[in-house]
Image (tube, rainbow, N blue to C red):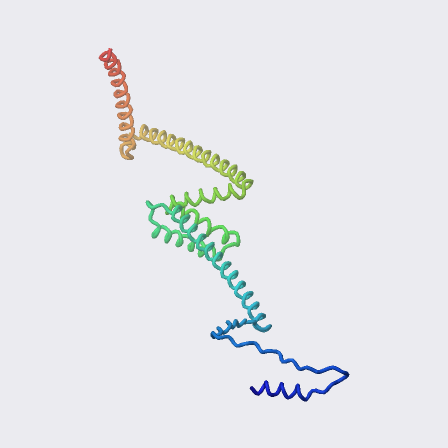
Length: 252
């Protein structure tokens, strides 16, 4: 009502300017809706600051570095566990179940320490050679199967990683075996010759003195036992030959 009164008063009071009339036009306002209008959804955007972005980048880099280091450590640990299992299985394979290790390894240690004690005031070469020599000899004597397994394993490693050295080692072992065999043969021949010389000497003394040295030394019994065993072997062989044609005739 007030708006219309104001409009009328302005129209009455409007002057004439150059034969024109100034007309004031009031723009109609938008009408309010009858039904209630729903309020629009308000969406809040979380925009991080520059400091937060830098902190997140550093955190991601640190997490990646930590995960890489942890994976590397786990890899090293798994490899070490694999090495432990391999060593354990190898040791179990080298030690035979039929051989007792507890007293044998104690004797080997005592022999090795004795060698180092004996060679304490000797030459440097003796101090270097005597303990390992006694170790090898005592190992071969008290733990022969274990020593053989260890030697075979070391030989396989030598063949795999050092074939040239293994070939030279094989040649040296062959020469050593040949030398040992020749030494054993010469020792056996020398013993036979010595025994023959002693027997001839005893026979001559017995003939000249009339003393029964063979019976006193027990040689007569051994000789008669050898002769009897040879005679029995010959008789058994003849009997077997005689029985074989009889069995053939039965089958025919």
